[in-house]
Structure formats: C-alpha cells, structure tokens
Length: 167
Image (cartoon, rainbow, N blue to C red):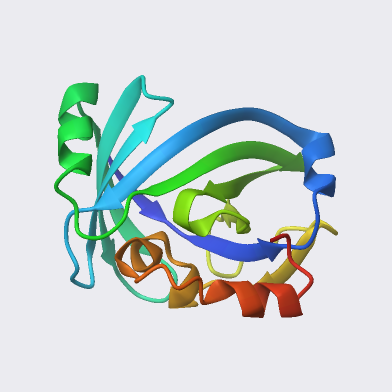
C-alpha cells in the first residue's frame, strides 16, 4: 500500500512516557540496500512481517510502499541483510490526542530510546510532551537505516547523554 510518510523524531529525556503507554510490539528490522532509498524487512512480534520501500521526496516527506509478507520469508531476509538487525520494542503513547511511537532499542543499541510522530505536513506542530529531549529529525545518526549499517560504535551515546536523554 502506498502512503506518504512525514515524521518528526526526538530523543527521549526520561521514562515518564510509560505512564501513558499502550500496546507494545517487539520489532526486528533490517535493510536490504545501502543506497539513498531504503528497502526494509520487519518482523513484528515474530508473528507478522512486512517489506517496506521508501523513497525520499521533498523536505521531510517520503513515498512509502508497505506490503505484508510471510513470516518465514522475513526471517530468511533478515539473514541476508546489509548490516545489523535492529531490535526494539515499540510502544504506542497518546499525548494530547496524538499518537507517538516510542522505540526502546535492544541489542547493539540498547539504552537508546527515541520517539517519533507522524504528521500531516511539515507545518504540523503537535504539542510536545515533557519527556521529549532534543529533536533529531533528519539527523542520520538516529536513522534506523544508518544504525543498521553502522559499525555499532554507539556514536549516539554521548550526544544523547548531553541532552539528558534516556540511555
């Protein structure tokens, strides 16, 4: 299914978001290409899977195509990816009527917590929760794709700590 994705991403300052957290899902995801566009395979709770293709357009917007795929095929694809498999638990958190996704990373990026919100346009200014730290929208260091292909030297640790973000 085709969609246009526009999102903002933030470091998370503390765990007070957990008071409003709803459902969570354990995600394993990896990337099948290293070019500017991304092809991602994602396994969700070990029970469902999807293949996502994203093309950057103008500004923050990305054309996104996402398709359900068989779980066994996703597991096979995770073995043939470019770089590391990103492991995280994603929580849905409501704040002033808006849905935020809070990702608590495990594995190579254990200690990193990021929050993102999908917005209708680049001019959409949702109310920001107090538990957010510095905005990192567009900072490639915090891109899942960049983290998957990085050497896992954890370059985000010092920057996040300087912001008082959850480590």
